[in-house]
Image 1 (cartoon, rainbow, N blue to C red):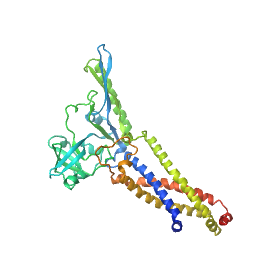
Image 2: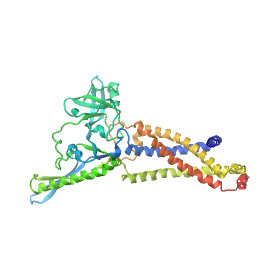
Image 3: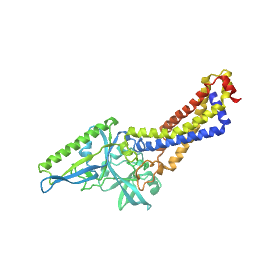
Length: 448
């Protein structure tokens, strides 16, 4: 029966090419707009390479330090207040002692110029270099095409180790099988121990072209305390399961509060020098929240989803009304045909099914066209499409492009297609239901 419906639908589409073309193009544009919006937010908060653990990852990027002291009159006053990164010893001194923490890493980036390979080739221009440690490769799940992640012995100098992206490996060595080769970055020589599949710059918290171990810095690498809390790193950690994320944040907050109280007690007793440093703001954020902080319309996850749904509905309701008007006109033209079918024994239900199958076929064709249009739009215009809601730049030097899993995610297409299919069916059902209310005589006489 369905096969018959499809054959009839296909014949009717061929007989009404103008109407069918307009319908398909309208549906394709609606699906393309919907899919593009889904892609924008999926890239921000979805599990994409190499940030597959976003659902159970939390981030601490900076803290607010307040420095107090006593003036000549013995009164306690605030001398300074500043934002800073985190001392990476926050991990062994506090975070690793928190229950249900799985893996935790400290990382930061810097720009480097003029990278040279041991074969004489060089890469001119700035690239992103990221400091990492052995746990970095557990928090962020990179695909290794060659070699291995950092191990503890790589954190000790010399020799210095490095992991590079597949794109940089191809540029410098014309191969990704380069473990054991050497590169020079700003007069420092590194031995390549691994090559990873290149990340997209839209996965901005893990992006890098070169990854090197942390350098020991005696000025900042001190045990974590209120007076030594500031540093140069962002802290990323995964919970053993997503449900533990909130509890871990509460435990960290309690530890920081206790440290502040202990520091203040020591200061009041004259055991902590002439100044008191306290951590006034220490914001542990779920990974998705960090990603949306760069969005021009910040809010909770629910607020973001509501805003996205309202935006999509607003963009689709006008095309849906237009399609409904077109279908209504078509149904008016087909009243005589409907009357003949009803006169020869067809049920109103079978006629309704036929109309809906016609629209489903048109929507299906429009969906394929819309998918292709979305791929072209997002792939060629990623530079501006995926940052359309952002307040600032992602990276100054990174080439903005997508990995295949960001663009070709089937769930995005299925969701967008079902969304548009529902609206299109509703647009067809209402005019068809109105047309089928007429009697057979009225339908047959509609052409007179």
